[in-house]
Length: 397
Ligand code: FAD
Ligand code: SF4
Ligand code: SF4
Image (cartoon, rainbow, N blue to C red; front, side, top):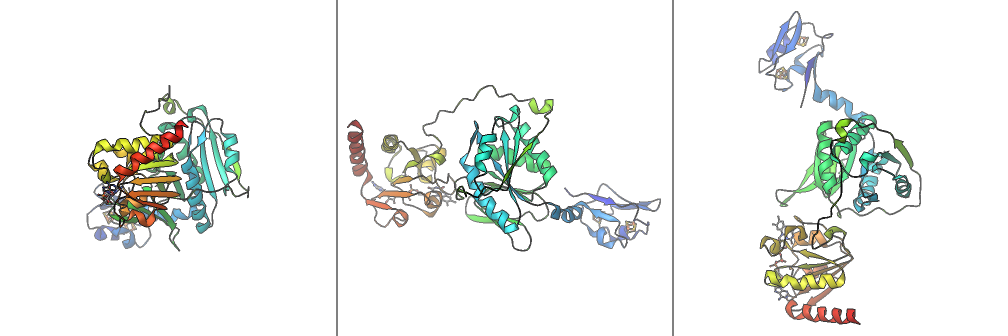
């Protein structure tokens, strides 16, 4: 929210501001102006004052923007392992930092992660801020928010990227709220606006019907969460030039309010769809919910996960966490087998970066064949049982 204040040393009590205010929100007492509680922060009085005695906070902030420099990424770890999203953020973070002509830094929070930080230096990074503490070993909202907000206040980066993962989606809004800055969630595109240093944050909006480009021109840092598997992953560069900066933080009793006793993994039919190297997906061509057993069988035989089109999720044939596409998950497996899926653009955007795409569809003109590496024009009810049988034979042998 904006704030307005009278700079008493500059105010002469001339009362010009009173007539400029459309809301009668200024009074002058003892030759000093005073803003009343019905002020709407419209700003009309600021330019009316001949002595520059009125300051609106949003102007103060704008003047302050140039003191923010650098791009940061949040290096997510789980159980001490660096998560794949970190490498995706490193790739896009490097591009943004180069466009701005600034350093790229990573924030790594945990306990006993020095070796992991050393490995991360193999990527094109300038700095790693390593914060180690037993409270940071597992993600907890309180201590992570504290650590991140403290560091941002000290170092003032202009851009901060986090993964749109369950951790990033919990942490980013809390940090943004504490810093009173903007946050764009679930971005699929990021670039720097020429001449302004603004981050153009692109994401689907209105149910995926439009792509919105969002900027945060009056606030810093500019914060965005990035949809996993949309950006390319960074590769080690062999150009080790970064440094690890160990940061010590003290935590209060308040930060210790939540204790992690044990992690119990949710038992789902699939492991994380976005991490799977093989995905077998089913669409409306399956005909009915029961026929998903063919997809499950094939996925199990190949050691893969089960995906789905939105049509079958909407029909209630399979839960929504299997959905691939614009309003589902973005995946990039080594092998994607689309069975009875037409390949509408909204499905394609979620899977077209898969290494090998096999499409099984009885319609030779189905759009899925435009992006398929191998196309099989067949009735899936005839084809899949034969394929499954062959694979089972193979396995038995
Ligand atoms: P259909 O389009 O009905 O295709 C079925 C296919 O099966 C056909 O090509 C047919 O030839 C084939 N077939 C039929 N019988 C057989 C058989 N016996 N053997 C072999 N092939 C057979 N969709 C998504 O998937 N993911 C999304 O995230 C998503 N987001 C959306 C967001 C918006 C805003 C909108 C408007 C739509 C979105 N959609 C999404 C829906 C998308 O437009 C399609 O409607 C949907 O992908 C179609 O699913 P489908 O391919 O299973 O069904
Ligand atoms: Fe009046 Fe607008 Fe000035 Fe507030 S900002 S005191 S409403 S002119
Ligand atoms: Fe004070 Fe400026 Fe208002 Fe005059 S116009 S009373 S100097 S704030």
